[in-house]
Image: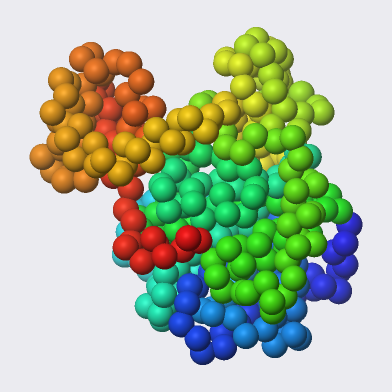
Length: 391
Ligand SMILES: [Zn+2]
């Protein structure tokens, strides 16, 4: 592994800022949200170090924060609660109304991060892009996880790394949710296996490619070609876009054990054995690709299954959004606007049965928790300035 203990001896909240006083996008990087994932911290420190050393005259600002500092210091995913499952509105409301003296370890981290995130947004003189750097317990190429909005998708695709759509609909309270609610372009970068020798370099490469595609760094200033070549090599043969269709949620009582040897993106058939738990064999409920198989003690996701999204559907989605079909979809039988929220559409599952989720995804909606026979879809927010990004 390329990290040394010297490089990782200190975990600070403010990992650094680089700003040459020019207008432009703000790239806000969070690293080490999970304390057993220090590779992102090292990668962003390398990028900031290089920007400073070469005095690169960038447009806009790069700002980076350390995530769960107490867990990073101990090298564990979290102490009391997963810091990346507490960013829903309810939990933040509880935190902000509560007394700081009663904060748990992760509450303290979140309170500090929330104040910094607000400051980043207030100080921005251009569109903000938030990225959250993670690593996983399984081998495989780097990939990006994002909510499926056209802005997120365009910026993420500009890096040339495979995209995973729909993970935020199956997990409650990831930090991405907080940024999505504010209409800010955001995604998570999965850099590779925690301890793999490529992982820090993968994260570093994605960050440089992002700086270039966001127009913050010009190729005449700094040659990103070696990073592009690196990403091309490590993602060779992978699909461009996949969509999560299944999450295998687990609790400690399940005593789930993932069958060894799965890598991210591995294809499985329906019925293939993916692991075991107290009830016996855990088979794949659908054919698909295994994503984020759990090979560590802590976590409440055993694995995810994804399917490839063909470029045809990407084109259909673009067309549907361009013609604003989302504005008239409530005319269809079984579909109505939520009287309590103009951005939410309710679907009666007894009337509208087929492809409802697929169509609403294409139209730019997020699926909420089912309410009995009713499915609710909320329009994803987007700021007008996002359209200037990665054009
Ligand atoms: Zn993580």
